[in-house]
Each structure stands twice: as structure tokens, then as C-alpha cells.
Amino acid sequence: MKRAAFLLGLAVATPSAARAQVPVYQPAPPAAASPKAAPGAAPSPPASPATEPAQKAPPGDEYYVEPAPTGPPAPAAGDSTEPPPFEPPPPEPPFFEPPPPPPVSHIAPLSSLWLGARLGWFFPFGNVFAQAQPVSTGAGSGYVLQGIPWRDYASSGPTFEFDAGVRVSRAYTAFALWERAQLGAGSNPTGRDGAEDHAESDFWAVGLRASSNADKLGFLTEVAVGYRRARTLFNNDVEYQFTDAPFEARLGLGAELRLNRLTALSSLLTIGVGGFGKIERVDQSGHSSSLTRSIDEGDGHAWATLTIGSHFDLIRSAR
Image 1 (cartoon, helix red, strand yellow):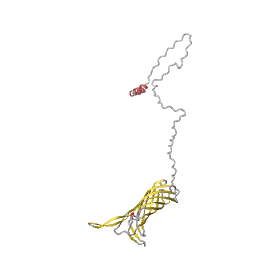
Image 2: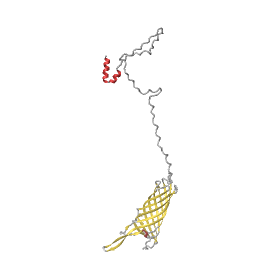
Image 3: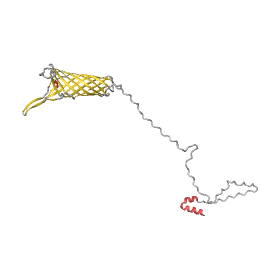
Image 4: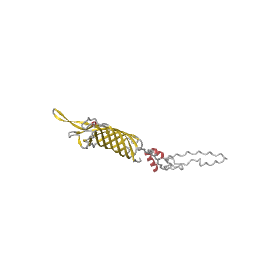
């Protein structure tokens, strides 16, 4: 009774589940009457247990049982459920590194003792000094400075230059130079000392030389600063000396062709500027006197040269 009451209460909450679990008793149908055996016939064999009606369980012993949930199929025999061992990915191929370039072969040495000479033509121009010329005006008298040209005391002529220095790198050379110009007579009209015979000039300087391509054909640049003196000689053995010019500057532009590790040829156009601070007359006995007065002033002169030269790298480095 208690069990039936529990099931009825469960039916109120979940009718479908209760109906599935309430036992239903169905009486077995009556067994068919066995036919009577005929007289004299053999008795029928007893019914086999298979043909006998199945014994029903008493009411209340039958329940609905839900089937067990089906899981994944069991692994076949010999299969392993463990994950495969971790295999790291293959390493990336290394970056391609090209082979190093072959060593560069140079013709010009990295360092050397540098010697050479140049030949060319010297062109003087500009003024050697400014001479004060007296003038008179309605307002009074005074002076006007008039430049005295260098061409009055010298004309163009051949020049020779000797260079010696050190190649401090393949493209740069520090050097010292001596330039000697043998000039012609100037255009100054005959004065108290007669006609001019010839003139000459010397230039001592230190400089720096650079080539854009020291191994082949390169652009050439030179800068030099030094001291210049000039002289004009007359037929009577009197000379005019132009000195006291310690800051003469020269710029050169040209080209250089390397022939081999020893020799290089070059052509150079130079232009220079400066100013003479002292101009003197020296007579036959060696007595000197100034050609300028206190009212005269210095002025600027200039020159240009066009030269070709050859230079040699001695005691050079192996590279």
C-alpha cells in the first residue's frame, strides 16, 4: 500500500514517468483444453517447458529501466589512447650570407715618400704697390692712390717647381714646394736705371694635395700657403727687390693619371694672390733704399701658372 501511494504521488508530479513505472497486471488467457484422447490412443507427451506459458512476475516487481548512456566506442585492441610524443617543428633554414668580396687591389700606395717636379709657364699680374699721386682741386690739394702694375717690372716666363712630401693616405699628400719663375723684362719705360734685363720670382710654401682617384685618372686639387719674393734686374746691375710677402696663397686644379705604383703624371692650373710689403732698390755696391714713400701703400698682386709634372712614390707601403 505504501508503495502504491508513493507511485500515485509521483504520478501527480510527473505523469509520464509515473505511467511508465506503475506496474500493470494482465491476467493470462485461459489455457486451451486439451483434446481428449481417443480410446486406445497413446497418451500425448507432456508439454515442453518452452510451450508452457511464461511465469509472470508478481505485480509490483516490474520497473522501467532507462538504458545506459552510450559512450565513445572502445578502442580496438592494441590501440593506445596516449597522445603522440611532442615533436618540435623543424628549424628554419639559416639566412643566406654571401661570401666576402675579394680584397680590393690598389695601385697607389697607402703611404710613401713623395717626390716630384713640374714645368710650366708663369703669368704675373696685379699691382706691386699703390703710389700716391698729388692732385689739385678747387677745394684744395690731395693724393690719389694709383696701382703700379707688376707687368711694369716683369713679364711672363717659364717656371720650374720641386715638390717633396709624404703621402699620408692613398688620396692625400702633404708636401713642401719651391717654385722658381724666370721672367722676362717688364714694360716699364726707361727710367733712371735704364732698361730692364729680366726678372725672377721665388715661392716657398707648404701645401696639401688631394686626388679623387689615386689609382687611375682622378681630379686633382692643391692648396698651398707660403712666402714669395720677386726681383727685377737692370742692365746697369741695379735690381729692384719685392719682398715681405709671407702670406701668399695658391689654389691649383687639374688631373692626375697613375701609371704604376711608382709614377704618376699630372697637369695643373694654379692661381695665387698676395701682397708685397717692401719694395727696395739695391745698387751695384749693395746699398738698398726704399722705392716707396710714407704716403704710398701696399697693393695686391696675383699670378697664374699652367704646368705639367711627374711625381714618384718612394719607400712606399706594401698596401
